[in-house]
Image 1 (cartoon, rainbow, N blue to C red):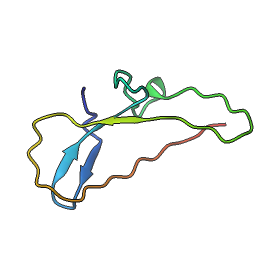
Image 2 (tube, helix red, strand yellow; image 1 turned 90 degrees about the vertical axis):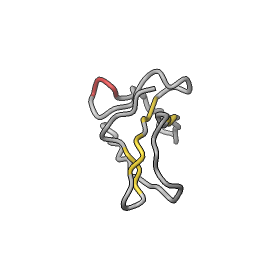
Image 3 (spheres, one colour; image 1 turned 90 degrees about the horizontal axis):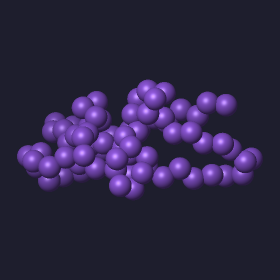
Image 4 (cartoon, helix red, strand yellow; image 1 turned 135 degrees about the vertical axis):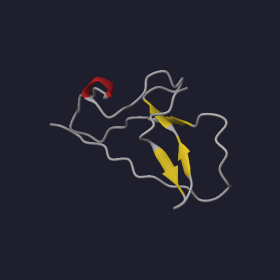
Length: 76
């Protein structure tokens, strides 16, 4: 899988690249554009959209607590 270079977890010093995907097989990347968005039709009730993540191999970073914030925009 390919990670969006803009997506990376950090422990404050080190970075770990990752990708977000709209399918469990991690083929359809969830990106930062309309073309990579997720279509969803609301019903008026609570709904769920699943997102899968993947980390590319060969990232040499120390073990630790890594975090990132993902902002999802819902358009009505």
